[in-house]
Length: 261
Image (cartoon, rainbow, N blue to C red; front, side):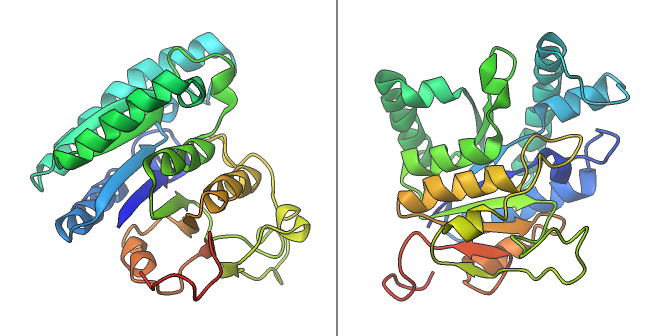
């Protein structure tokens, strides 16, 4: 399968902003193993600003655009250095692509992106995509959940997986309501499902459940299944790809009309 995996800042980093080394190492190991099994893997990674915050020893994520952009330019170096080092351990070559939403909206830029991605995958590379926060302005408000869905649509992915700090979509906020239940399958994005979207997420990230539901609308609208799962243990990716119940799966088709993954 062609699989887009998006990982959020709160999953990549400790609350201090410093990289969660053990989790990143495990993520790269699992993705490398899935690639060895024959899957095409595309990683959409948040974390540049968060890594920059940690590298600069800031006490909190900045709010002004110039400092966000400065932190992103510093953090992106650390992020890609780490990915390159970790994937190299398993003989996989990474490629960095920085995008803005405008790149995917412009016809020529989108075509260039699609052609580059196609060739990278043919060459056996593992593309690592992040929003180009260092030069973006209003695009800073576009979260990488949406970016992941737009990338999945552009490359014709079979599956989009959003790894977050929550197990999936719940019937209510599980932090506030002990009776909240995890919803395992969503066959249609009804108004009731959409209403379950929450706030903005953690202090390190920008995406909350509302952003993930927006990503689900883009992905399922393109006929792509999407799964929200907890990235605390990246080995959950094995279960997701094997079709085992994990997190919340949004169907880009009617269940039973598509062969089991």
